[in-house]
Length: 137
Image (cartoon, rainbow, N blue to C red; front, side, top):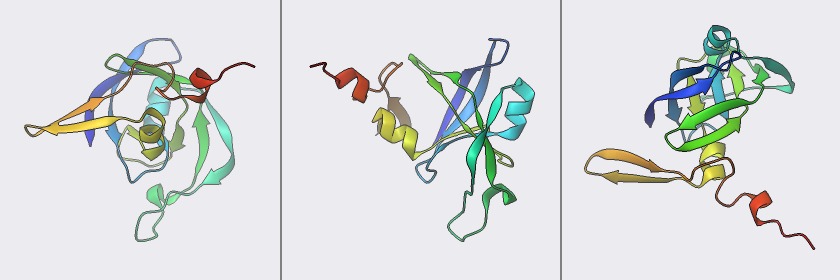
């Protein structure tokens, strides 16, 4: 499912609108290397490389991911959050929000009249985030 362009913060604090793909077949949050380079987003090495394989066993992008972004402010309509992305070296989409993101925010997707509407709670924490439900003794 494609969403329209959404603002992302850059190292200079300026917003940049990017197209995000919501993909239930992807397990993580991904950002393409060209976007990282274009926006000057800082990255850190992953503890271990991550291989993203397709159904047929071929490696997406031909090379494992080895970098993760620092926290980036992401906005989707009224929703705002700080998020770290895994940098996909060779990816055709700018941003992929995978199943982990969908599970975290417990989105509701409505398919009415041929349009996709995503209902998501405003950030900064998910609706059922453990920190919100924590009670001190």
